[in-house]
Length: 161
Image 1 (cartoon, rainbow, N blue to C red):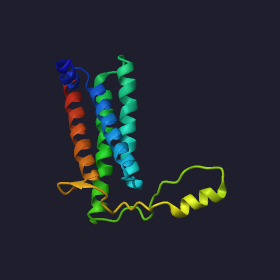
Image 2: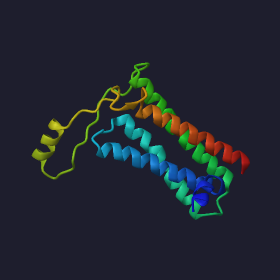
Image 3: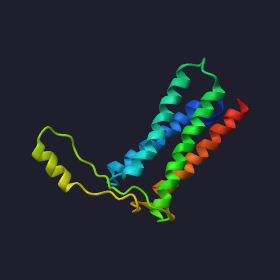
């Protein structure tokens, strides 16, 4: 069993990329459940992983799709995610200005008064504040490292396909 899991990146790199994207998203949502609410730019960084999951699923389900173009599309999608993460790191480090609005979590309701209450009492999540870091690297920084590594992985597998 362990041998088959370890050989997955070599046997089916598209599926591996999809599973890696799923793990990254699950981790992000886990942090959110733990009380680290995402800012607007954090949400932007999740979309490429969602796209990778869809591409991986389609590519794995339809073996007629040529491997090389699929891996190149996955690589490009991860590269977009890495670019978004790097931009967010720059905003956190105040190298440049990011979005000028803040985001917050507001529940959907039919009651206008409840919606107004939720908006007025929702915490503002700033993109330029680091909510969590480890060894001086923020979540956006780790996302940049992971997305870059997965970009290079998919490029290398596409080159060999």
